[in-house]
Amino acid sequence: MALTAALALSGAAAPAARSALPEGDWKPVGGAQRVYSPGGPEQYSYAPSAITDSGHTYYFTCHNATSAVIRDHVFFSQVDSAGATPQRDHFVLAPGAQGSWDATHICDPTVVAADVRYRQNTYHYVMFYLGTDRDNTRNRIGLAVANDLAGPWVKYPEPIVDTPFDDERAWGVGQPSATTIDPRRGEVLLFYSQGGPSETSAWRRHLKLSDLDRPTVGPAVRVSNEGIRGFDGTPDVLHNFDIAYDPPLDRFYTIREQGPYPPDAPNYISSQLEIVSIDGASIWNGGGTWKVEGRITPASTGFPRNHNPGILRNIYGMLPESGLLTAVFTKSRAGDFPDSLWSYDLWQVTGTLQQRD
Image (tube, rainbow, N blue to C red):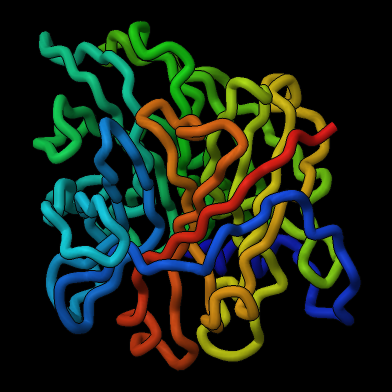
């Protein structure tokens, strides 16, 4: 879900004269391809968790289940060829019952492999998601487990990461992205956005979930914002990002929405995306500076809005092939809400990477 409420209070810079910025080493090979569209009119699909595994490609997305009804569910789709009809396409997680903490929307899924034991059953996959019982405030991060990517998924009853803010008008925590540390021990590194009364920021936690009846949720460690700038050269905020690890290079690669946001409708989603990277030690230590790898812009896609992105990853949250990154992003036409919302679908573009110093 969008972080517009928090960004309005974050001190993010207003648009200024555009300045030259380094383009980085990510070199797209060919143009963008559509990879998934919702099944009917007045439906949307965005914020993908894209997975390649054993020759198949899967997308978990934020998707409405009923045409013209804006209520976020998590959908699972298997689409092995770009532009093809999905082999499987159905929702796997719905908002909770009335009165539950995630009763209104669930969105922004991220899925990794990790062995988890919960209520005397063993599961092999973990999904983190944003949930809320409001509209776009008091967001929290939930968790579900499964033995098949297509489901059934079993929800953990409480948020695994709660909002740290007493102010119920604050955006909270959400937009999770995860990588597996040790699948056999259920160890996961969870990243997420946090929006409060004064700023928006990125955080990570080390989770040990092998015994989900008694999970260990490590302390919140702030992720560096150094090197994060808007396309106009002004300071920007790391949020609404997906992350993947490349073990041979020991680097974390991130795709993020890049500001400033456009002044015309819809002004709550980005026009362009940026791919950045940072060394592994900086993620663990909480410091370091992000390096620009490349950008996805209206000029390169032909779309006025390119937003809510993901990275095609293997089941452990890693790049499937070192030095090669496929960006999966949401496109939108310009125009007023909700007409622009019905144009949300998924596109991808692949590019090569070079090792950064």
